[in-house]
Length: 539
Image 1 (cartoon, rainbow, N blue to C red):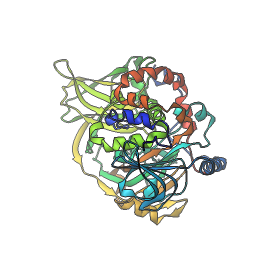
Image 2 (image 1 turned 90 degrees about the vertical axis):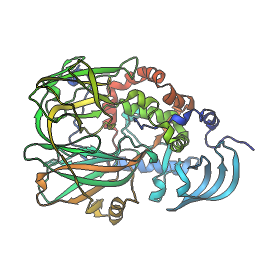
Image 3 (image 1 turned 120 degrees about the vertical axis):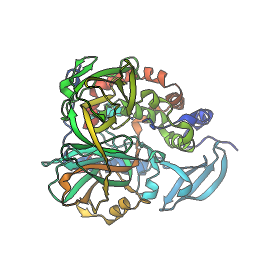
Image 4 (image 1 turned 60 degrees about the vertical axis):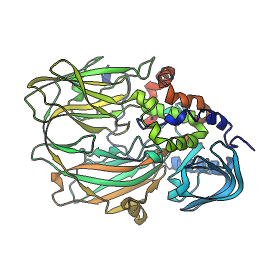
């Protein structure tokens, strides 16, 4: 007997295009001068938790409604392509049990009845029921069709609702400020990754430091590790991180004399790391259209030159991520599972390859632009600092070029730097973890055991405490976080579900980026306001 998956009428469509979707790679690649472009940039230095008990009550009411009124199901997608569809189920740390059917990779019924599914056979789980789950199960579970209380701005522009990997807040000496966001491109279990962020704004005057880790979005965060990295500073200078995980002494900094953009000279915006950013607007016809900006530095001979870029992504990539998830709709687990099974074949394909990152080029003596690196950081929330090693530069004027998608990057600071020696980090695990002001031994054990994970939900805030050496002021601080996160698929997105367009995301991205240009331009001017205004904070 052959049937269509009872939970989603379009599963047959997915089966027809499944052989094409070997190239799915969910964000592996991947969601005037700034003051003249008309977009409002909110102050992101400090985000106090909103004192809004009604928000928490509204969320809980929404979740109770989903649990009691929706048609409940759980789909356990197996690593071999089969799927269990259960309508009455329970979970423990090792397995899921319940009543339903087992479907083959071609969605034929293999068996019916009561099942016990061990987690080690499962690739991804999806359900439309929100309830307390063991961490091992929650770490694999995507929630679909969830309707939660959100701001009016988010309702009017669902692709601009706040989304975030874990955000990290540290004192700058006066108050807690946002200084890092973790593993921003890791939106599925198979994309788990390590992220390193500089904590240049941290101001520590004690032998302990506390870092507040928040889940501020409608997402499930799965955190394996959060370590504090200490690196000995040079006598004069700082420590900078390269994209390959290396750390280098930076002893001299040279500002650009020229920062030439299509809208004019914006040099004044990139001379200091102060939150004033150069950004542009996306193209109105093709969202993948690129632009170039040129740099000039007047410098003495430098034996080991490097270019420092402090930047973050705009909300263009966030919009594209949400639109892709909307096209997947109620079948998001099916697509995630398919990508997981074919990860070696799908790397670097589709929409996110078309968008790429920020290319860094240097003009050589023959007049050619040589590519020396590419910035691929995905986070739109916290500005991070990156260093690219450069070839030896001649004395005098050094010319460089940055090439990127229009409207995709916000650049805060640029500098040429003279590098000293490579530095090795000292890694610290948290000594204590607090939740709701109380010590949490379970959370501490999860973050210090490489075989465990800490799972957090909307509104969760953990305080991580680290013990520092007595001479801690002679060290540079970096944060190393590892994990992934799972977006909650909003009810408002499901109207866009279309498996043919999912296939287009990965096989005809150029066509799709032209198609979406008009839709994005209609909401671009309000994206930042809607995004920051819809953050979820636990009072």
